[in-house]
Length: 561
Image (cartoon, rainbow, N blue to C red):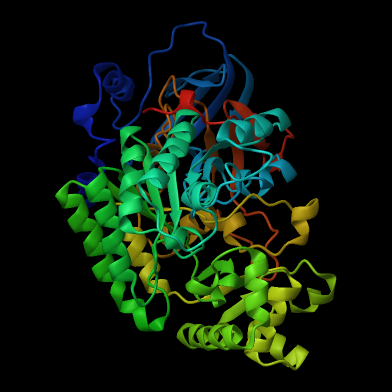
């Protein structure tokens, strides 16, 4: 890791000055004893027996420091020892043979949520080395406004009862909190409303939510103002939790949207994570340098800030984004009525065409799967091709898909620049995160057409930005996938290879790790992931799933705050 990155590691939740003596000894004792640098561990007594020993790996602790060659031992779901040669006194011995032994990858931004009930193994996540993830992003969560899950504890319990293959935590969706108090409408919140919203949020955080997410490009979250954000963020700050934001704008007004996000952190004291950082559409590509400088300036000011991004140039969102914000107000029935009203429809049409023009044309928008069998012909095709097939113009096609797919059709839109991705990942306060979900080639989720990021984010990150482009050294890249997101989420004793920490471990080949998912055929597992352990349980063995479901809910007892 270069000096620029080391200078940024000392953010509030990672500062060595804040590390207590016991934690310092954990992270330094073995390195001193063995004459190694950056390796965590403890001395091993003769005759020790372990559940598993991973032998002869290139061990990256997840702190950004150089690796060492050696063994990692697991006992009772925890890392028991790390050393040059721990022998073979274990129930199971796994020979890494020089592969990288890393903490399991942590995805800070997902929309997995209820998909884990349909694919409990977490297929698309575990096969890419992800052992923990954070859902409830972009202002939406599967509880509060749900009849099945009035609170996060109810949702967590259902997941635990079903059994899950990866560790899961959730944010609270601001849109759901808002809807629970004032409904899905474009109305201001008064003091009593904010008090009620704060009480709902406080209860969810007490039950183990890791923070609050905003989706300010989506209704009803988009109807809030900065006053509302600051009031709720103060509740977040009181819990030491995280405030994440899908900003109000990510294209023409992205700089102003960043100012709003940072101001809400400054005024509330909440820790800020900017979600899927991007300068969208060709007219805005040159704004990325100014955006990164805003992060630097906020960090220098003392604001606890970071950002995440998926390693693809296409974003994914719903077709409802073709409807202007002010006409998304209310229920689905309200939106259907507008799509049938000539005057409202004309406004939506003008907005949709303007959006297509900013993207660079209808060929940039791919229809990402359809539920209605009659629309299967459009799945995976760009909007221009859909128009050729149907004989409709672009607006007629958009309107038809919105109505026939009950407003739930998604798109993948190519509107970002590869060079900007490199600039984002080179920054010390950024990390990869998928903005995807759990999927499986088997069962009902296998019939959907998700963005390939759900299957390939972390392998693609290593393949492109480490192996091919050499933008990052391997130790820094692993830190961005492990120790850094663990510190942002507040996960206790995860994200690093330290004795006593949870044994979430990914063993991979840095020379072959690669994303194989495509936009046309997304349900393809990556290459190069040999073994994955979740809470000490061997879940991926020699590239195949063992059927184990050792994941846990990362509730309040599993958080460091």
